[in-house]
Image (tube, rainbow, N blue to C red; front, side, top):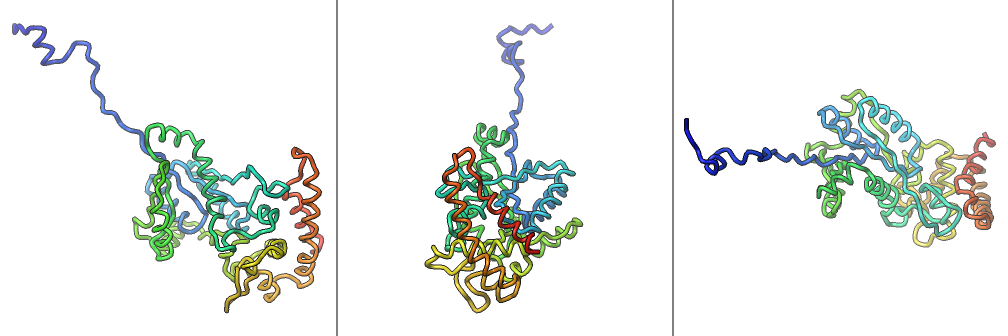
Length: 326
């Protein structure tokens, strides 16, 4: 029998009590789809699911004033994701401090309380930062998979639905230049070379209706045809927003900023010219609603903070006027 010294045996086979080596496998980065409920992000979601690699989480930020048909589509897609086991969350920006009272919790109440217009109508683009990106970031900072990834030194992958069209190329070039310590943004539609037409075709191939253009109905980027398609209660709120902000406007006329050959600067003037609301209703809103709103704000300021009514209570009364008029 071959006699090998213990020291030599250890060189050949290793120590008797040595723990076997294992291959350390790093957990994959969590993947989140920023879902705007539009064509591009819907096509991206459908394609990822069909490839067997759905995101770990789908996240929508709700401004509170999306077009009505967008909320209908969101409800349908929420059920579609639930049936496939895809986690889906809707988040909203929660204000902490208020410049004026009463408190507000959506974009419409925000502009009415502060007698202003959405930032895009004032030549700025902070709406998306405040009402869409910020609440998603806040949610993800408390999301357990994200916290574990950051503890491992990883970034969370954020999927963005920018397609390969010229318009989205400009948006991509700006967005991709911004570094972020927590998130790694990826743009699969651009990698696949999909433009808007390809996204529409993919949604239709999945047997789903094509979503309407995602937009707040008080957004200055709304096109005339989109305004024409709005229900009466949305049109009344547009008139209210412009009437409330009018005394403070200096450099813009209204939600559309300035008049062009194709449309006026104020959506109210377009609504009147197109006879989308009765002239008497428009006049009554402009004459009475801003003053009534100011009285409500003044009264609310004297109510103890825990009992102070929110702007939504005044809006419920304003919208009830529509029911009474019909």
